[in-house]
Length: 265
Image (tube, rainbow, N blue to C red; front, side, top):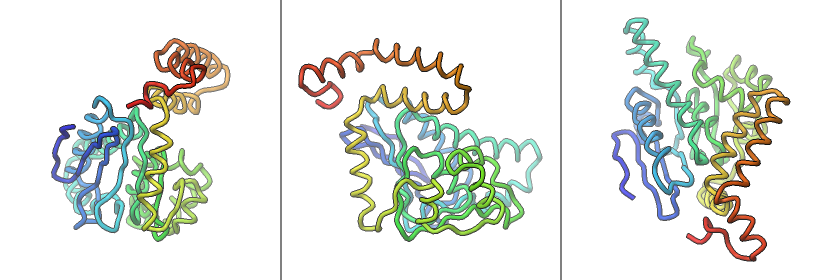
């Protein structure tokens, strides 16, 4: 598959439909600047509609996953007008939302430490597998700043109580603690990272891509609505699933003792 090229990103898609999206600013520990934020948004928009893409693996070049916001970028923004500053901040918010709402699962291959906005990047992943040597910290308050754009995703990931402690003290978390708080799904030795990612992908690729995308939307919807509303919504969604080609073929494959079409490719 022909993929777009970028200055601060690497994007490749393999024959299985697994996209690997790599933050590629190793000289700045993959810190987020205007170019990287813009290119991430463009890459995510491309992935959202790319035919045959079934999963995205998000990782970083070098020893750091993402150091958060580039301080040079922030310093430049402080010299701009209020309208320009709000625009730059809004671009970051829109990029995070686009990643969070990708229809296919995003697996974070967390190859090293993450700070500030880097923790936000982890939080928009559906599944996160990290090396056991990583350190994580929401460092904004130490710089007189706020973990603003990333807050909805970090709070959703770790819960309000854990977010309060980590936001307000900028405490450094080991990989083990980050896993305990819900930021990380799994922690492995560095030499086991790629094998762990492949195990996760092996499970994912057994699943119907349309059903997976619909289930991502389902999770987002039900956590934002009350029970009576969810009862109506989920009744409709199950009925919808019975009417899809995937649903029909999945049930027929079970009774026919054969593989469904999405496992025959």
